[in-house]
Amino acid sequence: MGARRFHTWKLYGYWRSSCTWRVRIALAAKGIKYEYVPIDISKGDQHDSEHENRNRMRQVPTLEVYDEEAKTKRLLSQSLAIIEFLEETFPNSGCSMLPKDPIERMRVRQISEIINSGIQPLQNLSVLKAISSNGQMDSKDWAHKAISKGLEAVEVLALQILEELKEDRGNDSVYLAGTREPTMADACLIPQLYNARRYDVDLATTCPHLLEVEKRCNKLEWIASCHANLQSDAQV
Ligand SMILES: N[C@@H](CCC(=O)N[C@@H](CS)C(=O)NCC(=O)O)C(=O)O
Image (cartoon, rainbow, N blue to C red; front, top):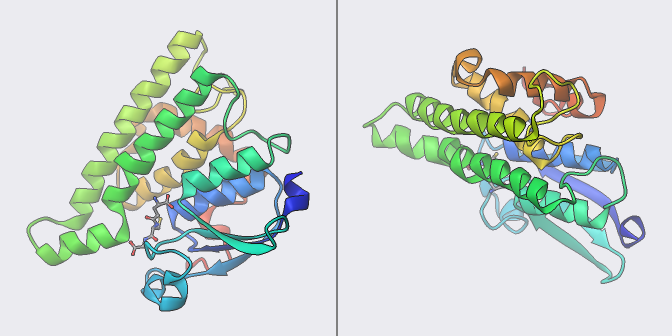
């Protein structure tokens, strides 16, 4: 029903925007083909009025789609809301971003929220710019601390879940929230680890288990192909 009602997908994003990357993973999970429209947030293109009309927060990502039932184009924003929309619209396609079991679903949302509201906003471009211009603290230091604290929490939580499930952390078929396939929690984790490296977080010490989960996820071609450096606007 989803494929008949919704078609012609366009993703407005930026190669190393972690929130865009999450949505790329969810689109890949559902096997949805889309046109990619780069918005260069490093040059401030998110502030153009054309983009502001797509995303009132002047951020990426925005996902555009044609809604056949309403005969209108829809503009979707907020990466986690987008991922949940994709899951609800295509529940039977590809990999499930949200498990059916309420406890598993709760765990996925809990971890996703730590990253989505407890880490990413603190190291977002506009926040780092404000910190730099204030001059009282080094913005890289700020980002380093915020990311380390959040990832430490995710590491502990993920290990507690494994303990409760009596799963071995080396088990190749268990993902971040203890699920048998990657979920929204993994989609949040992978780009966050990339950002952690940009701010020199010592991941091997802070969150060795999360590194194992990342490796596991990247063995899946559809996840690996979403990497920032592989996008058409990547500057590497
Ligand atoms: N909660 C939003 C956050 C979006 C967000 O912070 N996007 C960043 C890139 S990851 C952005 O556009 N930053 C531009 C800026 O700060 O000016 C979401 O999940 O989509």
